Image (cartoon, rainbow, N blue to C red):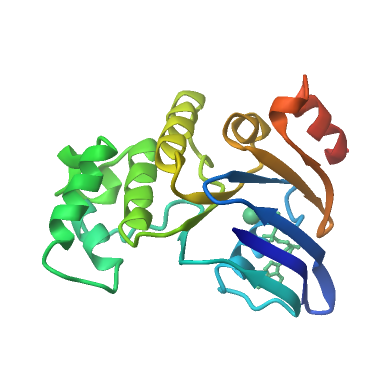
Length: 216
Ligand code: ADP
Ligand code: MG
């Protein structure tokens, strides 16, 4: 379980996260919605310890992996090199594991190509493989569908769900409410650094319409 308790964070005297508390059960997907600037990325970065919260606590078992917005693949490395560079563990089975992950994600045929020759959806798959090779218990995804078209976004939904089944806990920040309602078990909506609503999209007849009201 991931448990965030009373987390606050300010930048330059401005409160960006204001007493955030939430829980995600193992193997569940939490969607983080909210207008641009509401603090979604900052919350993910605090969970990943890329930022230090000013107060409150963040607890979980195991390790986290982060999928950055816009993929952040190393442009001068091939797909395979991008995967092999990431984990600090090393070991001679690493390459086999990398290739097997690329196969699972349907991208092995691109293993010797450079990121510039991949489509957005293919880059997303490589970024996911690069996160998975570190064997995370929790994956934090920041805007995983930014820049992807609708069809590719639907592929990403399938992809993340296939990874998640019975295994990995996920927290996914996105401005795309359609995507979030398709993928999330629970959605929390941030506004001005506070959680203003918390829904199970399956329990609501029009979850997107409901969430949109908070953007006005
Ligand atoms: P979101 O991901 O919901 O769009 P962010 O968490 O990126 O929101 O940003 C929330 C606010 O915090 C924004 O106003 C942003 O400018 C500010 N912010 C984020 N990171 C920093 C930082 N390192 N220094 C100063 N301000 C920051
Ligand atoms: Mg963001």
